[in-house]
Amino acid sequence: MSLTRCPHCQTVFRIDEEQLQARGGVVRCGQCQQIFQSTRHLIDVEAKDTTATGTDTPPMDTQNKPRKKRRFIGSHLPTIDELLGRTPQQRTRAIFWIIGIVLVASLFLAQVMYFYSDELSQNRMLRPLIVATCKPFKCKTSPLQDVSNIELADTQIQPHPKFKKALRISATLINRADFAQPYPLMEVTLTENSGHIIARKTFKPREYIRSLGKNNNKMPTNVSVRARLDVTSPGKRAQNYEIQLVANR
Image (cartoon, rainbow, N blue to C red; front, side):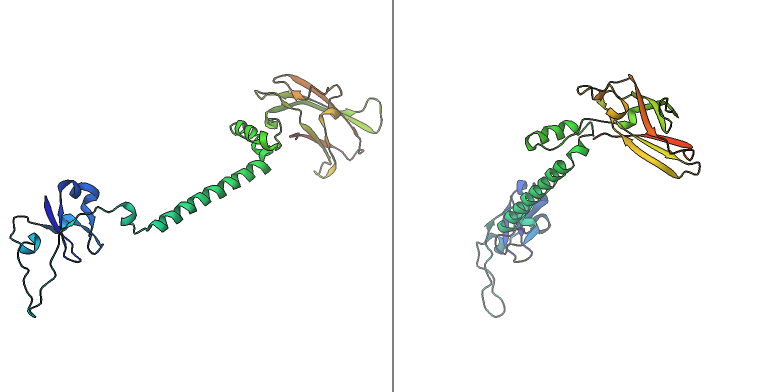
């Protein structure tokens, strides 16, 4: 058992070793409510301090008025809230702030998932979560599609075999992805030698694959699919052509 003195009001406390070790020896004075480091203000128990023991009459000052008797008060170890100076009302207010922030963040995430569910569902890692979340809300999710994994090969352009003012464009599509995906849109651009665009048109899958059935709307993996397009010829001005695959959503 040790004694420590509050440096603010000079009140003496009894304090044991466990209390000295707890919170690094920081305590709150039960008399003036000030926090101080008890280990810095220890008192030798064996010293004949009549004020500390409280057994003798306290000394008088020069004006013959008794000094305030120091009392022993059970030591009080402060909590974290006390060390930070927080009141119960402040703690309650902080809890409501945290709950409000969580609710606002949840609402924001829900709005993002609802309005951008179609785009987010194209991420293979997020797709299971997006699809499961969208079921009760009936938000839109398109089939998984990755146009970058569709190979465009053997493209050719030549005069139409039946019509004079028409061109026939043919190409081979191969789905290199590890999953079946919707047939893409084919955007055909005709340009002059200078790069000036003469004509541009986007074709749907049923326009370049005549035999495409209703239940056959996805490309199998690693299978060659022959595409054929018939376009109106813009005349001799068209010297170059370009075909781009666009996601079909």
